[in-house]
Amino acid sequence: MDDFFTARVDGYDEHMKSEIEGSSLFYKYTASLLPTEKNANVLDLGCGTGLELEEYFSVNPQAKVTGIDMTESMLDLLKKKFPDKDITTICGSYFDVPLGKELFDAAVSVESLHHFTKEEKIPLYVKLKEALKPGGFFILTDYFADREEQETFYRQELIRIRKEQNLPDDVFYHYDTPLTVEHEKEALLTAGFTRVDEVNRWESTHTLKAFK
Image (tube, rainbow, N blue to C red; front, top):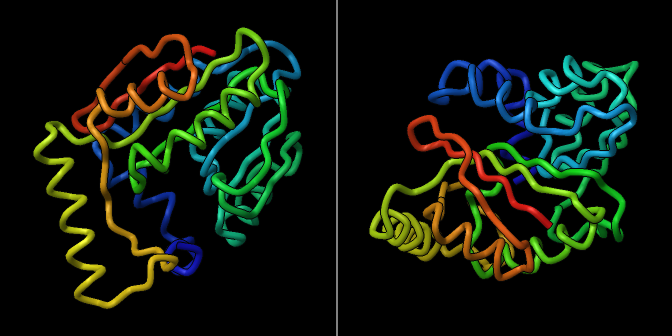
């Protein structure tokens, strides 16, 4: 995955802003849901170059953000964009990086988690819930499948491609395999979040708010 996004870092912001339906709205909307208190501590999973943070820092310039991403070049660009902000970057997989216990007021992820199965996400969401303070919440804005049949098709197509190319299990192949909104909610609730609301939608991109 690192190589895939490193090769695309130069045009990444423009691609996301111009090619993804609703992006001119959903980055701003997502940021509006995050804490506005001074020095709020926010975790960003798959932060990339910080498109959602551009909007968030305009709302809360004194927020503290920890951003996790697998691509060092994107994190370098993120730090160049916000040299005066309180940002801690971690280069690694959010599946593997320790998130700590009750450290964050909120967490956010935008257009990052639609590559993984429900079963893969549940342990991550358990870890994420534990990292949130009491009363904390998780904002997920992502690409979702419209129907179960669509979700199944994408997953089977990925399996077919991997077999065709004889890819080992530990090699990532970039292919979107979004869950349905209902299956995403099930993963979050199974992980221990007490409530999950769908709060907005732009075509295939939806925003969910999961409460600890």
